[in-house]
Length: 349
Image 1 (cartoon, rainbow, N blue to C red):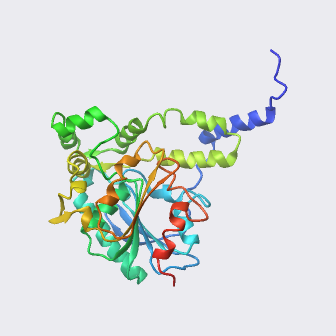
Image 2: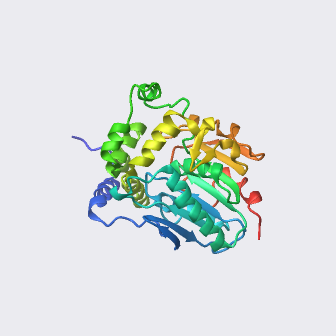
Image 3: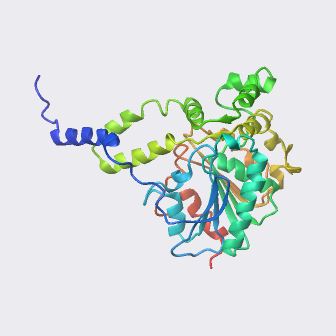
């Protein structure tokens, strides 16, 4: 067979060398931004990231999902949402729920909101000596942030909701299953009651099914650019995150599936959290809701109507290009959807 004149032997060697390096070399580090643990409860930790050039009096309080590990917000130097906040003058607190085990199967959403997030917010306010804070929630963390803001008495100046599921009136995936659940023809409760706790691998494959075909052939995308070491390192960090789902409390997922999902109580204003009405109309904070235009996991339809339910006089909805992780992996400047929104609402020192 005649060899193609444009065939690059060196590039092909580097491609296959890079491809097989994922099994032969140590994993690249994640979560390298310096931080301090300022509060802990059970598996959860409140991390403090001090800005090296603090410019703003109002710190950021980040709430991450219960499904994945939080290092996606701090992948690597130059590719870190947390690092970009710090470089732009914001102190950051991260509510990291950790990796629950079977012994945590009875933790409810109420517990996460009141016993975890509320106590961590109080600690962050005391630790920072700030009068107010900005709360930013990512994915399911955005759902928790919105729920918390609807029942909280703490001084939340700004509320930022990033790629979060909030409105389940028309679920875009598994339509027949969702309709059966709404009609009472199908219930997850017996399965959840039997399991008690949903292991991380169950969450992993369930979410991959929901977002297919995104995860069908990740190794093909790697092979395509495996000659580029920086690309291989980024791929490995992201692959570590996508494979690192943590377990989920059966009580919490049952509450999410029934009250917030099937019955859509939060958007209807009928959800009750520890005796308090969790109504979006209770929210007065400056609000920014961000959705990804090509997000298959949490499509824009799950959040776009939320601003119509809140009482905030200052509120905005933005649809940005990219998918579910677009808002999480950043570096350098603030992402465009925040660059003009956050600074004027954060009080310069």
